[in-house]
Length: 479
Picture 1 (cartoon, rainbow, N blue to C red):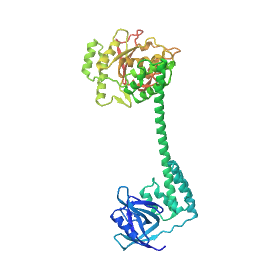
Picture 2: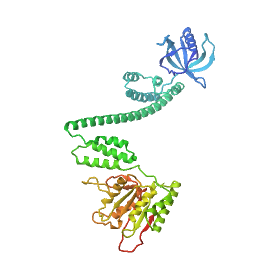
Picture 3: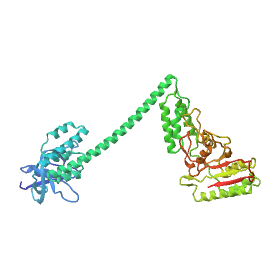
Picture 4: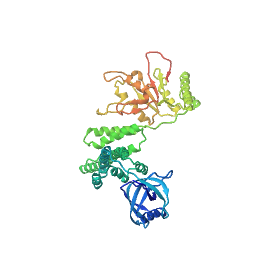
């Protein structure tokens, strides 16, 4: 086809492709182009995108269908795009409009283009079905021209202006269809992921609302049946939310609370869960006392409490001095383990082993708690009982921490040499996890089934021996 001279209408916020019918708001320059087109015999003009860095190389040849005003009162024109045109050099023409030489682009339709058009139609129908645009689907099914099918992408809201300009500047039908197929597949993949995420979010919200409604109904039914929970039981969730506990402990508490809310009052598991919740919530998970690092004051306290025992007191003061130096260097916790220690006090009865443990606690400014192990033969006394047993309780170590009210007390294990062993287990072996610095930062009580950090405690095992003649009091340190 031979080139023609047409006035140019540049648009900046719109990309017009062949086959589209669009309204265009008119300013002074665009009104001059519309007037020039209407004054010519053919009544056509070239609509091209306005680019910042260069002049467009392609546009669409359009006819002016109607000129009027928008609902806001501004002048506008309705244009119908007919075909793609290649922009040549500028020419002169009547009126104030800019005229250019335009060469209409002839499209070559091949069998390959028809195959690509059918594939692209299937993808477009899949997109429209998600939007439930059934009338548009019928229109797409009636389209047969591959070029028109490709240029209909000008109406696609998921394509950006840059991509639509790329389609305008691609005269080859096969190339346009291949590009559109790639873009549409990417869009479908994104839509599927977004729909899945949205569905998961809706299901989660519906499940939460359904559970809340069922809990309210269950509470109302129990109230009508006279099966109300005891006072304070309904407040477990508030107590858990307000408790200052580690994240792992909070997750375990919420899991058990969910079981409690689903179980019946007649179930024996209800009492077990309530007892377990009370025990865990009463433990001082994040409560610690500040250590005193005054070595001179420590020696003064030891001298005031005990006469003699110079070697023992010197060893204790040496240990406290090392702790003070480690505190100055920020080495209280290394590798997730605290700087607690195990102190062994050995000697006959009455030489001051227990009172030395109390003095160490007072010197450090820590809580003191005594655990009597004489005659203990059941391993559960140390590790605790399984919750499924009737009358299950946590072990003596956990009860001592609870009694002390802090996570770093001085724990005196009294008469460790009197611990026995029988068919119920070996308590001495269970004490290894309590005293070993490599293990006690993750001590696990059978009743709690939660990791308890004992590495910040000072443990003082106190064996009593009368079969040999030890010095009045002997101390050893496990660092």
